Image 1 (cartoon, rainbow, N blue to C red):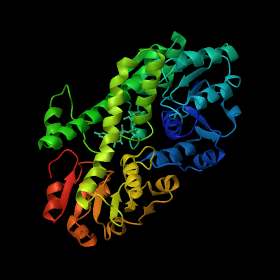
Image 2: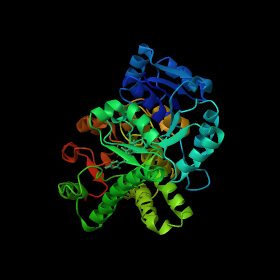
Image 3: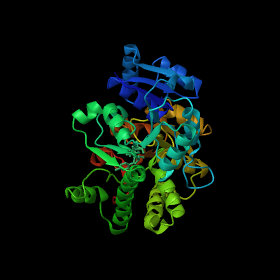
Amino acid sequence: MALKISVIGTGYLGATHAACMSSLGLEVVGVDLDSAKIERLKGGRVPFYEPGLEELLQEQLATGRLTFSDNFDAISDADVHFICVGTPQVKDGLAADMSYVDGAIEAIAMRIKPGSLVVGKSTVPVGSAARLRDRLRTLNPEVDLAWNPEFLREGFAVHDTLHPNRLVVGVASNEAEDILRAVYAKNIAEEVPWVVADLPTSELVKVAANSFLATKISFINAMAEICEAAGGDVTVLAKAIGYDPRIGSRFLQAGIGFGGGCLPKDIRAFMARSQELGADQALEFLREIDSINMRARSRVIDLVRRELGENLAGKKVAVLGAAFKPDSDDVRDSPALDIAVQIHAAGASVEIFDPKAMENAKLRFPTLAFAQSIDECLAQADIVLHLTEWQVFREINPTVAATLVNNPIIIDGRNALDRELWQMAGWKVRALGRAS
Ligand code: UGA
């Protein structure tokens, strides 16, 4: 008999997981307390921008295998329950806010049938899974809990869920592993590496992976600072070290650094947890990773001041990009928006354009100005900042763009533009980690 699964929380992770599990042939019900979100999903609309997801959602709704509900009773006949709620940074510290995960466990514990398996996917502080398993089994002794961290990237969420580069399952019993093998039978048949771990190791795999990625980015941004001081070029340096397969060339793109809803809060929550464990010294370096990352943002503002003078009042700054990365409308902890806000606060008149993230950016910072088009954004600018490397920005014709601005100066905050092309069109191009 086909397994039925439930997905608790239909945000980024949950909506993607629900649609993808349905496309693997499982019967899926997605539940969320947010009725408006559920209505949209039922209607085949995804409440955020993720390439390919809306099409997949509509296709899967049409099969009848995928349903959504704001009534948690809808999960009661499912065999496996995936917890996909968020764990944002707490407002008054570095730790992760576990209230949504805790709330989800309380909400489902008495509704699920004996023999069913609860599977956490949310990114949590190590030790949470064991604690939640105890709590769940106190409320409902005949169920089990496993942990199965998610490694999807925004912008590639569907691909990463359907074709993960590994599946990691943290289990406390053989039965739990057997159930997860049945859920992921198709991936296993495609020889996706299957890593079985205990509960704490599975939780740690996720934060260790994100910490490593953050470290790689901050490493290259530290090299960018050195290149600037020594007159080197960080893009050539990154290319050269990346040929060493032990280092690898990916995630060595120097620029304004990492943002989003994951890397920044995950390294902070990891530091907070290490302190609770009495092992804070081991992660002391992450504090430096975080500060190199935040410094990249202020270095762009220093560059703006170097070009326009200390007093930015009355200067028009065109900002290309608001999302934390391309192919996403997510503006959580976006380096681009952070820089825009700081320049605005310094008195400049900032105008922003982003192909997908304008609505979210406006909601977060209603006092900033947003342009309707790239041309409108560039018009009369004293300086242009390229802060999110969307393809449409790489396609800008620099010769035409030069006729729109006041001053043809651009700061490439992502080292993603064709510098020679822009220079040939008369632009002064500045970038982090490259001599001008
Ligand atoms: C990240 C991880 O890459 C995923 O594996 C993980 O599942 C996810 O977090 C999560 O924890 O849910 P994501 O936040 O979608 O995924 O974004 P990334 O592609 O990792 O990029 C993060 C940030 O680093 C972006 O702001 C990006 O612009 C920046 N970045 C990335 C750089 O500045 N340089 C690089 O070379 C690469």
